[in-house]
Length: 175
Image (cartoon, rainbow, N blue to C red; front, top):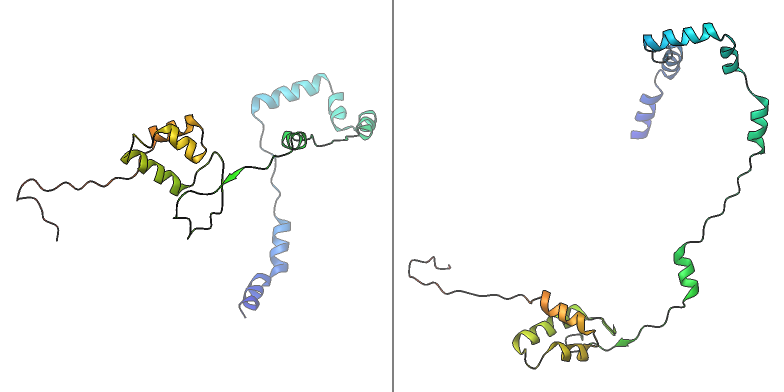
């Protein structure tokens, strides 16, 4: 029902509106600056054949334009070339460590990578027992590179909550 109303409004008096738009004055080109207008008049006076030269079509140039033939081919992208050169070797996988993967659908982890749960586990183990969980042991256990494990232990820490007891009786007590 709404389409009929909109169509009726849109088509109302369409002929008169179209005639009004057609009969409007067309926009004229922007006026030239007086200094350039005088220069153009001066050049036209010196060389009157310029005006005819501007309006004339040059058949020789048009024939050159018709002779132009463009044949283009897309360049072969470097990604396709690399894919064709080296066939991708199958990635080696390992089973995830720990019992916490029973609920999650992680069947295997690529060698050289660890899951989030494994990362948190090894960071926590290293924090609690730094003598036994050294960077070398972690790299060997999780099949990681030594420099990656060193960076992991240096720049990442697990979340830690510390609760400070109130020191005086005037401290606000939790409700």
